[in-house]
Length: 400
Ligand SMILES: *Cc1c(COP(=O)(O)O)cnc(C)c1O
Image (cartoon, rainbow, N blue to C red; front, side, top):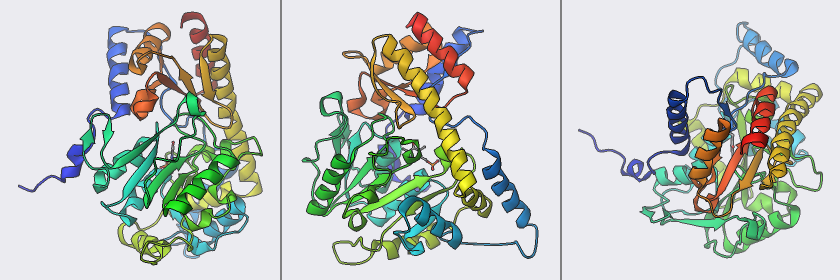
């Protein structure tokens, strides 16, 4: 028999979302007839809007013609890479610094190959699970020690620090995962905060992997939509982003990573050159159909549709936030972000999760599932049909 990759055993049992699904099933079977509404997962619900959708269907049709046919495009269609650089980064990056992916999560998993099992890791606590679990699989996280992994520096983000961490504990030469607008807290870092982050990375020889998957939800023009709005970020930061949330591509699968040529390893070698190599070695590119959809999404018409779709989810976020605030629950997020992070001081977050499920028949996500500092918080997601969100808000108002 073959040996199991020992790092798989280091993954913590009961991954968050399967555990939530299990509790929901148990509740449903003991309460037949209850209409359960989910404000739990970060999965999109609204149809892809017409112009972007026509990009997808035209892309598929073209593949059936000699003139329109295309095969492998390892690092992505040049036209899409150029358009991403122009639309999101004012043309700051060459097309060979923009890599098209099948999604941000997939790239976050693959990017770890660049740094290997010896890397030191720092994450915001709480955080999106793949930063930690991906580091466990490469071996960089080390073993489980009480409340966290030995090789990971957890940077608590709490109401005491306005959900922006103290950067002091970050070790020299680490990989720093940073997400803004943040999943799960909904906090959006401002220019001063991101400048401090970049300065720390430069001073300590770190690389930031900046997850900007929710950048299109930012409405306050003073808030940076990309880490590259900060001077020096192009020497120390890789940015991952995605069409999943802004264009409804969660099932289509399309994202990108920016790996600037200015980022070097300790040996002086180019991180960009290695990423290009890896893209051709263990990834053969995103779907050409999805990329045709991505091109349409970045037309003037597509950008309007992204604005309309994100406005819709932000409208849901406002309803949820208002309903909670009316009940006296203190929360952050829900503005410039589709997540609301609600505080139930002194309570266990799984216990609050169960209470909301039992009283309101609403599924949420317990904050503790995103890291130790998530204890006593609940994440509400604004991804849902409007009628469901409205009904959930009525129930929260009447029954919580
Ligand atoms: C949803 C999400 C993503 C997007 O992942 P895809 O693989 O592109 O669908 C990335 N980062 C965070 C924090 C997310 O919540």
